[in-house]
Length: 169
Image (cartoon, rainbow, N blue to C red; front, side):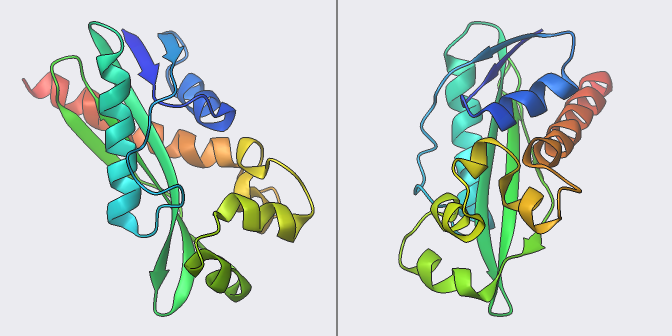
């Protein structure tokens, strides 16, 4: 099976490689078709779907995977959210969501002002390029769960669904 990941982000690529160890894996930058900072489950999921569909179209007989990180509001609090999508060569779509953790209240205003979480995180943690390394989840879980591990869980959920439904046919 040939897997095409709709991102060049190394945490997303590592997540897919962890789950699909023996598959041929290609990476391609695919636009998410959503805002730079997706807000809410619907927008974040749509970004993952768009990336998966776009990735699949770049290579014949391939399976496309899209992973998207975002934020969501619940009870006036801000949470990290993440979604994934996988599209099989015949066009079947499977989706899954992953871990959610509460973000500091001080992040609400910059996010509402349109600043991306990655920029807010870089300032907060006094680091650069967090989204390509441990991610917000790595910072706020004290390194217990890193961004690639979070996305690997989502990819495992996607693969499991794809495997289950392929044997049902």
